[in-house]
Each structure stands twice: as C-alpha cells, then as structure tokens.
Length: 271
Ligand SMILES: [Zn+2]
Image (tube, rainbow, N blue to C red; front, side):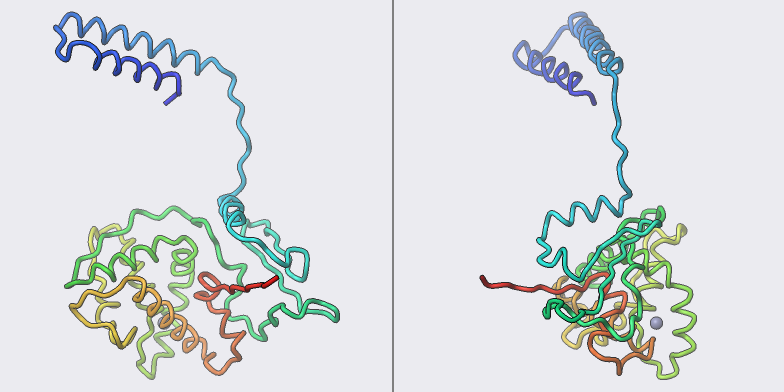
C-alpha cells in the first residue's frame, strides 16, 4: 500500500476516534465517500510517479551477500577464491597451499564424495506446501525438527535431487540390513510433498529413534536441538556407509552432503 494511502487511512481513523463513537448513518456514509475520494486521489499521485527498478541478482547471490555481513573472512585474498558459476551455484576453489602459502589453510581432501558446488542455497524449483505431521506420542520435537530441515532449501534440493539414485542403489547395497537414515529422510520428505497427503506419519524416522540416538526414548519428550544433531550425525554415517567410504581419511569424510551443507570451521585468532 502506498505510504500516502496509509497516511489518509491513519488520519481518518484518528479523526473517527476523536469524535463521537457512533455515527448516524447519513454522516457515516458521507465520511466513507469522503475517505474513498481521498484514497483515490492519494493513489493517483503514486501511480503517476515515474518508478525506476533496479535489476536484482539471483536468489543465490542475494543469500550470499546477506551472509557476508555476518562474518569476516580472515584470508579473503589468500588461497581461497570464491566465484559464481553461470548456473548461479556456489563454487569455491580451494587450492593446495604452495610453498610460501599460509600454513593455517586446510589440506585439500584426497577424495570428494559430494562436491561443494552442488549445494544450492535458494529453492531450485517451486515446491507445494508440505503435509503436516501427526503427533505419534510426544513427537512434537521430532515433527518440528523434520519440518525445519525439510524447509532448508539446500537440504530439500539435495534430498529431491539424489532421491531416486540414492534409494535405488541403497536398496541394492543394503545386504547388511542396517538402517539408512538418508533413505528414511528422502522418503519422508517425498511423502510430505505428495499432493494426496495433507498429513503424514513420520514413522520411518520414529521407528528408528533408538538407532538415531541411544538416549532417545519412545513416547518421551526430547530436546529438538539434540535430536537434529543426532539425526544429522547419523545421516552422515549412513551416507559414508552407502558410499563405502568409512575407511577414508578425516578430511575426505568431511565432503558428504551433510558436511557441505551444514559443516564449517571456526578459527580463533588472538592478537
Ligand atoms: Zn540410503
């Protein structure tokens, strides 16, 4: 609503409250017409103004710009470069430290399981509003955590994009019958997007609470933050098992989608 219209409404409301609380019908009708005329006049002013628009960047670049205000990059001009690919996806290039480069840079992982440039921060496509979740007995902490995770664009994009390839291959590899929380999350996410479902039971996750975290108890209230931490840890382990990468070195293990989306390092510097 134009600011000028807001002023007109505000003035009319103030005038109405200052005067008699109950108006007679003819007077009210007159004031209503007067208000409408003033609103039309104020709207005209706005509509006749010349409005100029600035071209905005992609959602990806806008999100990155807003994030950049929240941290200070201590090594902005050193061995790490950041660029935006033509598709709008984030591309970070970490170069191996050369002779003379700073020693505090992380080593390049020997194996990259899921490259960081596959992370898409904004919504890749429009999703329908997700289904609600039934409370299966004090599971509000779990339902709200799942809904929060499913509404993180980078997470949702990964779950949807890898859904068929992961679940099909994982079924083949699941001879040891261990629980794969990545499959469970992908299937639960897909069922929330099924238009025929207005509400779902997140049973695939709820039935495996004990596998996700030994401390989690059925039917008991739990801490949502603790649950998310345990779930993401379990998903990371499931992904490593799925890729048969449990024997990799530490740095390479940190290249799962979970690490690329949620991971990071904090470095403190004392001066
Ligand atoms: Zn799986």
